[in-house]
Image (cartoon, rainbow, N blue to C red; front, side):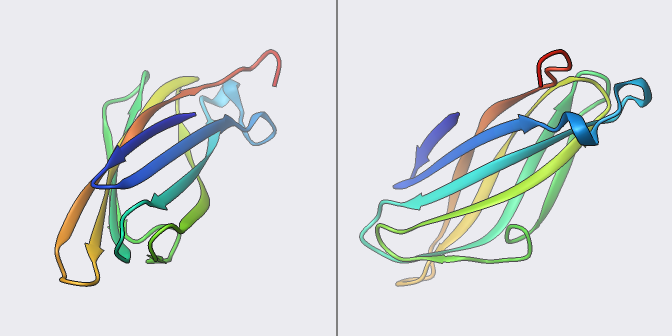
Length: 128
């Protein structure tokens, strides 16, 4: 599991190869990743946007940006957490992801940039 804390917000990410949905012969490798966002601040935040960098050993860098996460813009009060599951596909069995969340402090409207730590996408095609 990869973790990083920025501006009092802890991000934890765990990736898993999904062998049953992948087809290595067609260069199609599917991964899921579980992200937990913990607000360790004394104030409430709202996640507004995300930006992902997906590095695939077989392709160049792919950027994915958009509002919220899986269709939500969760509000996290002090001490609370939000977990979601998402996924991606890559053409090789090896890659990595990292990114940023953009959150707003609801008390004063200040925008914060939060690091999503880099994590590996490695297809375990023999044991998974």
